[in-house]
Length: 133
Image 1 (cartoon, one colour):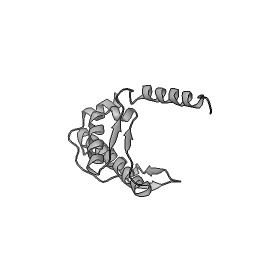
Image 2 (image 1 turned 90 degrees about the vertical axis):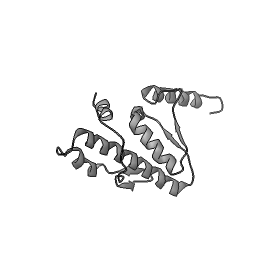
Image 3 (image 1 turned 45 degrees about the vertical axis):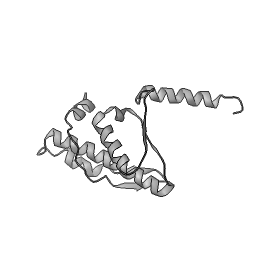
Image 4 (image 1 turned 60 degrees about the vertical axis):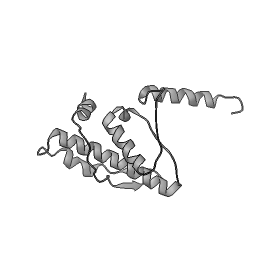
């Protein structure tokens, strides 16, 4: 119920700064520690904290995509995983990415949650057992 409660308390997201992103052996990692005081601030409403969380996550995903494009050139972005079952977050991330010129893809025939993970594992197993491997 926690993630659904967060999504339910989110309204139109306002632009915010991304979390600090560092390169750890070619893996772009976000430092979540600056977000924690805001999430624990009882002077803010639950809706304000939820909005800040979603907007910060979206801004951070955009930052990681922009940094990746700077390093590797033009590419497309695929969004998958259970977090993208959150409609508000997903729509905001797609909007931000498209505004910066990214082409964005999402699952349509295979679910983005554990069902998609299972489908990917099956495809990997099929590819690994193909003749000539």
